[in-house]
Image 1 (cartoon, rainbow, N blue to C red):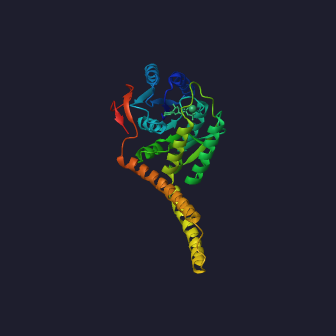
Image 2 (image 1 turned 60 degrees about the horizontal axis):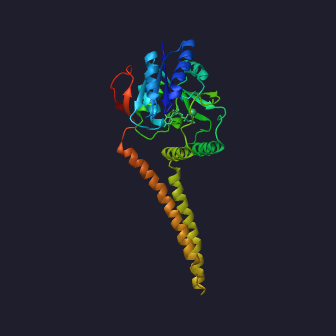
Image 3 (image 1 turned 120 degrees about the horizontal axis):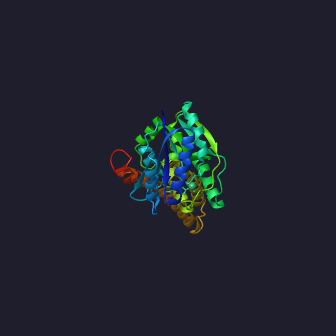
Length: 315
Ligand code: UDP
Ligand code: MG
């Protein structure tokens, strides 16, 4: 019988673990789906891992792991994917904002032969206006940059074993899970879902962390900002040709260019362009530097007993 793995990244979610484990176990048993739940505690500072241990002791189908520190949601997703042994893997938030009722539908589509089932948000749920606007802008830019419609996409998706293996083999450390499944291709379909209220606790994202996430992901998926530098260079060359002709004309006709104003403006504008360009290039160099170091995406400090292989590991 086919096995479904569910990966649940969890950061400071002590209030959610027990409840989420119970809700999922009940649902999957009712649907008679063979399953395992993998809770990845992302260096939580509260009792999340203790809760995972408790849940695992009560239900042998529950596994878990703890990171040595907080590595971010992407890292927890990838750790979960590498621990999963299922024929299909679902990634979902452990705060039940991704409604579990959708799981049987995803499972059925997988059985029909789809290899990727993308969860599509019908609406964005209750978020602050600033959050909604920045997320909206982010996805608009992202969709443009990577030429895929990302607006309603989320990290809630089902992946076939084949796709999981492809993702696990990617050498890069800076990943953007949400877009990578689009990039990977495969036989894809979607299911729509309504984002739920968070069961317990509060969102782990601040506006600042969202902005950082946006810039990192946009640049890890696109080199368009670099081409922007060329574009800016072309514009300033165009302007300088026009200005040069004008200056020469005035010089030859005996009226010199007026005062310092022109010089100051030119220095400011060109200086601004150059520094902005250096900044963009510097950002890419920083990303290359990070990748070249080849450090692991995450470091595992603990695993529950039912996890096979090494007790500690990195990936
Ligand atoms: N999460 C994580 N590591 C982090 C931040 C968040 O594993 O550094 C997990 C978190 O426990 C939750 C999921 O990612 O299961 C989504 O986070 P959250 O609910 O805070 O985000 P939101 O739903 O508000 O976008
Ligand atoms: Mg959430």
